[in-house]
Length: 147
Image (cartoon, rainbow, N blue to C red):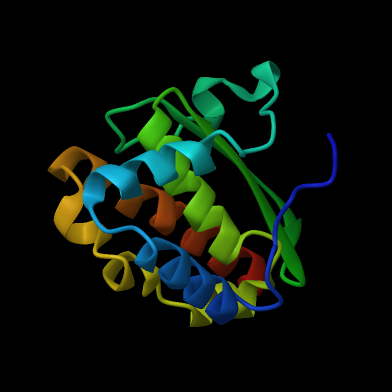
């Protein structure tokens, strides 16, 4: 595995601010969806060997696989989806949370979702999937913090 691209910003709060700023450039949701799709294409390659039921994130209509590595000092998440828009949602979540300490992950609410108006523009199934992704990240951070 190559070194994961995250974190891009020094803190989760700065990552959320950068996401809000980037999405503010787009006038309408068709442009924002295209940007999400473009971000999803930037996800690092996900090994085929990890695309197993063990790594499958349930609660998503799309196929999503996620693997967590690390400890309380630094957790790294690797994820992939068969859906272009969901891949973009994964990219945003990893940008905020991957490569951070368990304490920082647990202290960071996903404010970027409201800041960019995402909640109002996702289908119920995508919202459920995003909630499942964020819950997985929190659960892994909590487990690492308790270890």
